[in-house]
Length: 111
Image (cartoon, rainbow, N blue to C red; front, side, top):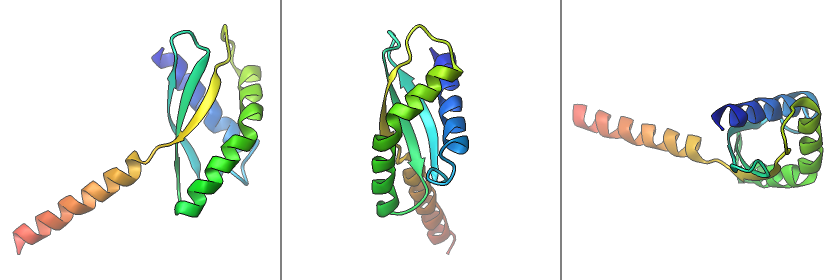
């Protein structure tokens, strides 16, 4: 399943970079979680930008979800092409905040 998830992630990122390059420049697919029956998959993506950009990304993926699935079906051979559901992944932001917090604590301890 890991190989299928990685294949789908790589292909979706490539579709975003080639077919939707102007609209999807700030979006990166981070992780895919495919159901064991291959009928559904969760797509976790990150967005560079503020809350407005995040809302625009939700609208973008809602609008182009069928086209991405169609393009995915043309690129990979699986028993089923999964129905894709998109989620914003905030883990990069949270990780960045955590690193900043740790830096603050370290600088306070050094003073």
